[in-house]
Image (tube, rainbow, N blue to C red; front, side, top):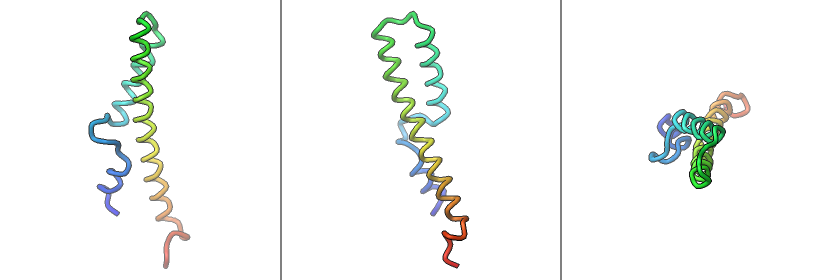
Length: 82
């Protein structure tokens, strides 16, 4: 298993933002929604974008969790056939 393989499993498609970028944009979307003053149409568009960004973040976090679990499993005595 190579680190390239792990990255490919953990990362969403290349046209999606990285975790930090998606998180930062999601924070901005929430800020704008909480501030109010946008039309219903704009608010709905922001909400939809927020849902997309939340899914990107969730995907990244699930991939990171899987990598951590795999790494921990490799280090436990039960996982080794010595």
